[in-house]
Amino acid sequence: MNRNIKITIIEDDETIRNGYAYLIGATEGYEVVSTYCSYDEASKKIASDRPDVILLDIELPGTNGIDAIPKLKKLLPQSFILILTVYESEKLIFNALANGASGYLTKNTPSAKIIESIKEVKDGGGPMSINIAKLVIRSFQKNQESPLSKRETQILELIGEGKSRSQIAKDLFIDLETVRSHIKNIYVKLDVNSRADAIKMAKQNKLI
Image (cartoon, rainbow, N blue to C red; front, side):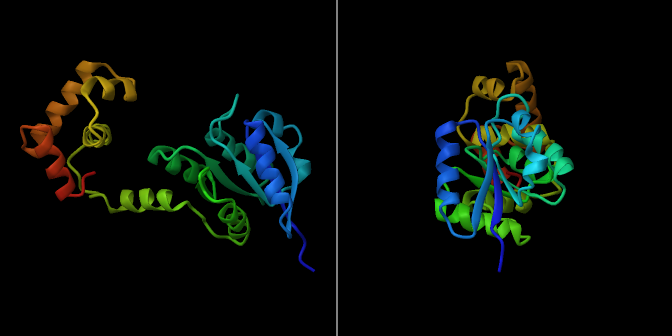
């Protein structure tokens, strides 16, 4: 007889944590062996819980989820880590996967899909929410020969989202003058004179 898939949930929001624990625990073939409000709390006991799959949030008090992944992999090399978060940032997705996460779901994922993804990850799969998969594919489709630096690409993407220079400066934690300088370099490299032309050129050449 197949044994239950053992799951640990690390999520700081008590209502969400209890909700997932109830839903998953009530499903045949699944067993929630422990729940924690942070990695720092989990690190004291999780090795003895020996979960097959760890559901991990990113925004946690103390050690965040991205930094917790390699630590969890060290404690439990046989366990699979499935990120469950509200964040859809390309950088976070790639950092999570690079650090050793096996899948990445957003919290608006239907509960049936989350439960299915736990089994999928345990069987060696790499489940992702549709929107996350699209982001990953789009990133791979970008032109690898881009003349733009990583920061210039980032700024151009924010321009494409309609953000002003001051909003970009705030989002990227850089000063306004630096943003102006990057935009000037973007215009020179793409041989354009306006935001609209820069975006059009970048999309045509798959730079963003």
